[in-house]
Structures are given as C-alpha cells and as structure tokens.
Image (tube, chains in turn green, brown):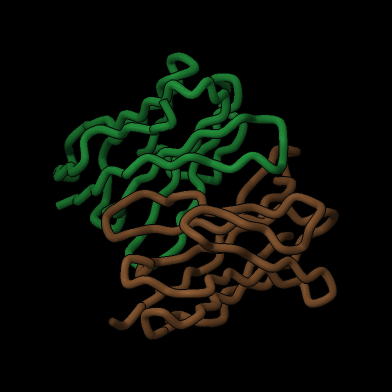
Length: 114
Length: 116
C-alpha cells in the first residue's frame, strides 16, 4: 500500500466550529507532515512528526492543533478558524532520518471557513 | 537558509515537442533535490530526485532532470510532451531545519501547458 489517505475531501466550517482533519498511511513511514497550500502557491510546512513526536512547528497559530495517536495516523484539530485559513491541507509521510527520502502526499482536504 | 527558484510561472509547449521546466537552488552542503507534480485538486506526486551520482536522473512518466552543480540548477525535461503532462510542477530542496531536522523547501511552481 503506497497511498496516503485524507478525510474528509471537503470541509466547510464556521468560525466557531470545531472540526478535525484525518490522515492515514500504511507504508511504515515514521515521519508525517501537515502542509497548507493556497491556490497556485507552493505547500507551506505547518508541522512535522517524527516517531510520533512533534519535531517541527512552523509557528502555526494555536487554533491548529496536531495530534499523532500512532505511527499510521495523523490528525489536525481545528478550532476558531479565520476565513484566511481557507486552503488545501495536505498530509504527507516519509521515512525519517535521511535527507533523500521523498515524501508521499495525500490528495488533501479542501477547507472553507465561512 | 535553503531556497529554490522557478523563474517561469508558466511554460507552454506543443504536444510532441521537448519540454524543459527550470529550477535553481541554494543550499548549504550537499543538495538533495526533488521534482513533484500536482494535478488540479490533487496532492503532490513524486517524480524524481537527485541524491548523488549521475547528473542525469530518470523518473516517472518519461521525465528526467539534469543536475548542474556549477550552475546550481536542476531542470526538469521530457523529450516529447503529452497533453496529459499539463499540470503544476514543483522543484524542492531538502536540507537542515534550524531545529536540526530535515525540511523540504518548495519552489513557487511552474504551470505546464501542453497544447494539442
């Protein structure tokens, strides 16, 4: 299985809602990533988990809260988001510990904040 | 700090003609370079990477890339373009993050349009 899955595919939420994005991979990768991508822009790194521990937080606002419950799952909890947070949220995974391991990306969750 | 530049926002090429998508990089130490492709409303797909060795790297779907250390470039090429190659292409470099971890930095992307 060489696939990263993400649910839901689309999400519309109000600024007072709480929602979660989910990501799953079964490739045995021990590094997992959250990216935010605006239209026609490159992905921006948000968080990196390595061996289920948060290793990089790119100064992301606290209204985004990541969680890695096990080596296959990665969640992104959302609360009190702003309309400017509307974007495509991409999950990725890779083998950690080496510079030359490519990342495998999921299809993304298209988030709209009203 | 590492960086990647893709000087062309869009490249247009006729079907059957060779294509080139340009990328230059800046990184301390050995460069680890990648190309990804993104189709509309999809995630990124890995195409190829340069780690070490031959300067010409072959990847998926007939794509290849040429590493040039003196020009700090890693241009993506294909001998004969297909309409289905039309997509957004990202060059990326992997290097050390300030926290001692590896981080990927993406270029701004180049939209490839293959004209039938």
